[in-house]
Image (cartoon, rainbow, N blue to C red):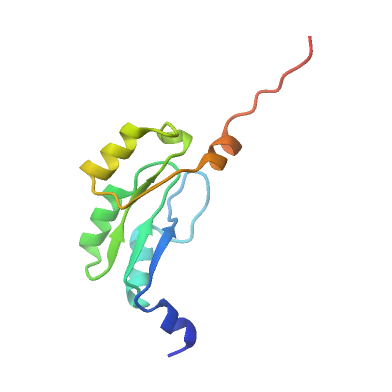
Length: 119
């Protein structure tokens, strides 16, 4: 077993993007990623999306890939209303999300820019 294998074994990746993603092409979907993580001996994953809560998907993937802790969460990007306490409450309480992340730079950088002209 290599040094890298020993580091990966039993680990939890807390920042896992997956496909399909409406903005970025990803190599694998959540199911493929979870299956590969289990094969590598990982303990778990936290699924992350900038567009929607991953808690329901994490629940489904964890049922299909037993033996791997698959957790979901919510990024507070503009797609969910930014700093939206109702989205956090719904995701964390109703859907058992494990993570809420504030993305202030992502919100500012991804807001549409309107070209202004001098009058």
